[in-house]
Every structure is written in C-alpha cells, then in structure tokens.
Image (cartoon, rainbow, N blue to C red):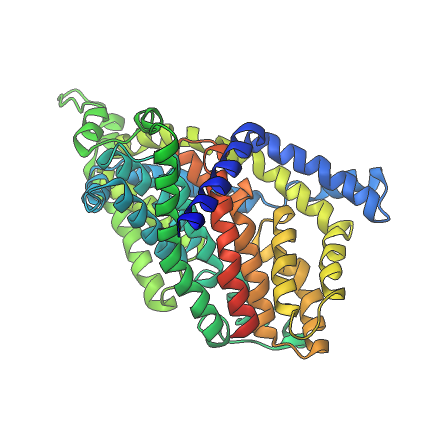
Length: 456
C-alpha cells in the first residue's frame, strides 16, 4: 500500500510539474493545436497547404451557436450564484464539509451527479460549489478543489445528456438505415454502462482525496488563489448592489429599472414555460433549458432589473476566453473532417481490431479524435459512419460501439482545455492549474471503462 501511494505521489507530482511548466494558456494551446492539425493534414492526407487553409476558414464559424450557449452558461451561472438566495443555498451545502478531505469528497460527488444530469449544469455547479467550499474550508488546495469538480465531466456522456446515446435513440437520426434506433435501455442503462458510472462515482472522490493529501504534503496550501476569488456572501452581495434611493423625483425610466414588479412578471412567465417544458418533455435537460432556468431564476433572485444587469456586466468579463477560442476549435474540426484526417485516425484503430478488442480500440480512437474534435455530437458525425459499419462486419454490438465512442469523447476531456473554459472562467484559474491532476483521473478511468467495454 505504501508503494502504491509512493507511485501515485510520483506520477501526480510529475504531471503537475510538467503541466505547470510547459502547458501554455488555453488560447495559445488552441493556436498550437491549429498549427499541428494543419501540418498533419498536409503530411498524412492528399490536402495541400491551400486546401487546409480553406478547410480551416470554412469551419471557423461552425460553433457560433454553441459558443453562445457556453458563454450564456458562464454569464447566467455567475449571475445566479451571486444572487443572495443562491449564495445562501450553496453556502449551507458547503458547510457540510468540515475538513479539506471532506470538501474534496463532496465537490467530486456532487459535480459527478450534476454532470450525469446535464454536462452544462455540472460544469457551472462544480465551479460555483468550489468557490463556496474554499471559503468554508480555506486551508484546502483550491487547485485540487477545482480539478476535482472538473473530473465530474468524466461521467457526462454516460448520463442523461449524453449526445450519442440520445441521438441514436431518436427516430430519423442520420445512421438509422445502418443501425436502426437503439433505446437508452441498451446504452445508458446497459449493465456495462451502469458498471462504469457507478465505479467512477465511487472511486473518483477517493482518488481526488489522495491527490489532495499528496499536494498537502509537498507544498503550502494555495490560499492566495482562494483569496483572489470573488466568493461573495449574501450580505456582501447586497452591499454590492446599487443603493436604491427612494426619491419622489425618480424618472419613469428609473422607476422601471428599480421595479420589483417588472422582474416578478417576466420571472413568473419564465417559470411557467419551464414547468410546461418539463411536463411535456420529462427530465430533458439540454443546454438551452439549463440556460433558460439560470437566466430567469437570476432575474427573480436579483429582484430588480438594475441589480440583475449590474451583475450581468460583471459576469460578461468571464466569457471572453470562450468567445475567442471556440472559433479556433471550429476551424480545427473543419480541417480534421474535410481533409479526411479524422477518418484516417479512426481507420487505423479499425484495422488492428478484432471482435473482442473492437470496443476498446473504438474507445481509444474516440479519445484521440476527441482531442481534435471536442464535441460529442460532432465526433459522432465523424466516427459513427466509420465505426458502426465496422462493428456490423465484425459482429460487435452496435450499442456498445456507440457507447465506446461516447466514453472516448468523455475520457480525454480531462486533458483537452476546450471544456475547462466555462468552469475556469467562473473559478478564476488557468488551465495549467488543474490539468496535471486531471491527467491522473484520466489514467485511472481507463481501467473501469476498459473492463466495462470488454467484459460486461
């Protein structure tokens, strides 16, 4: 046991050191990845340099809608978190943690559950809860708290918002003629998927607990990072709101800006739609409805339009990284798909597979492709038409093949900065502050995911 702890310590400190020293800012990482894919496309496909530039430019704006969704996740999540009501709610939950170890266990478990419900919801809740926990237990390493929150993203594609299992369960999906429709009972609620989810749900908090012990034993707690966060108590939130001066000479416009009635009316309309949506669709938590909920609860909890808009102005500053970087990732995806590079990568793994190993190699190939195409739906559009016919030819279960792609997509999210952006924007850290720890979670998760895909 001692030897195992020593190995974990050495590996953790090694990756943390490497990441801290060599991993650039997330924007520079996107640029470096762009250049790498450009060169790979020229070297490994028939594309000329001019072709690759054309592929890049043509795909550059393909993620605009998604970038707006992610920006709104950051803005609406920040606004909701800084409302007196939600601040108090998260604060009470954070008080369950009486020690650094308990804080790590709590944030990992709660974020994992939230990501199983919806990945966008999980990212925001993880960042907000991390801020409150560090205020409650300030001696905890803030880097490990935020990294622990992010490891919950490992479970998202095995949960209720998993884009691949939900796509193939929908009539009319683009591969229906090849594989038919596959109900979620055969994917999300299959024995192998339930095994992977439960194993990670139990072991990730424990793994992160040990990572905290390693960091505590080797460096001083990064309290400075915690102190730099805008963790605002309910009383402080109220003090930051503009003083509402009650004068009889307020203009009609100023009265509207400070009117609780205006916020109440529009907030109630939003709540009516939310209730009707869930009555009609069940627990279908897509990114748009999550944003809608956050937005209108924020309006209600801030009580007046003026308070709400003042908080929005502060929140928008956190969305800058997403606005700038997502077009670069769209350009990378354009080069990968249009040049045929993503297809080549997938075929390499198909060629070395047999009936037994195919799910595992599908999972690994998806992990590699996800590094360059970090979108579940986009990745399925790329790999589905390759992997499903190959699975049918080898006699491999198509439901398991689809979930192997889904888990590969989630797996390398731990080292791909794309999905860290919303969480880090709210948490106030840089990608290199947490990725070293997330590498360990990625390495560990390979074991239960492989067991589930190969033997269950």
